Image (cartoon, rainbow, N blue to C red; front, side, top):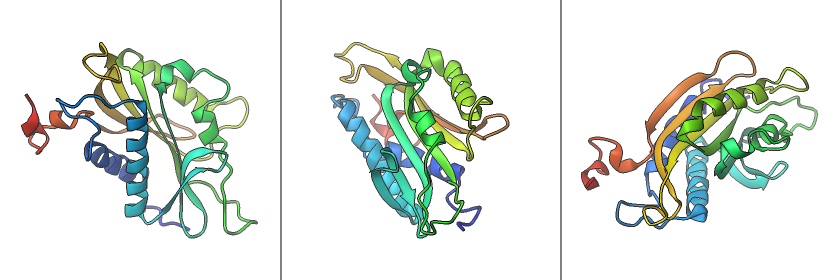
Amino acid sequence: MLAENWASPEDFATLFQYFWHRDFPITQEAIGAHRADWTIHIGVVVRSIADLMGFVTRFETGGRKDAVLRGTEGDEIAIEWEWSDVWKWIHASSNEVKKLKCHRVWSKDKNSQRLLKYAVLITYTDTLHIEEVYKSVREKWQEEKGKGAEWPLLLILIDFVRVKSKQYSSRRAFKEIKMLVFDPKGEPRIRRSAKALPWEVHETRWSSELK
């Protein structure tokens, strides 16, 4: 069994924040990143985190999860990331939250009742919808009717405001990364919050590029 204090949701959130800023797909001058660029960027971030945690990354596995981080004995962390505004699909009957909650855990021991350490959802929303997204995710994760989750969920939410295409090719100006842990029962726990654009992180080498 993986040590309780190894590869915690807090560890993942911290590493995600730093890797997100590293090799960022845009600069203040080169703003042409599209959806595919951001999707690939997150994939690279996830694989880098897995490497530091000592896991292997399996993409598009376990019911077509975007990624599963696997240890020597089985699945440890299941991950989904979605470019679409979470507010547009969170109420759908079939979505990434449900996929993560119902993940079928692969185990080397076929008779094991192994559970995930936790799941991770990385997604985006308009700044205006942040609190509503939190409420909806919590309701779906803790769902009283039907099967509730058996492990925590780390939600990594990048909020944005919509801008004209000539300002950003993605038409999104990112604001902050907000990271919360939703337990199967209990209140969500805020873990980290940081500026989404690296040049807005003061006193870093990226901030020296700020115009």
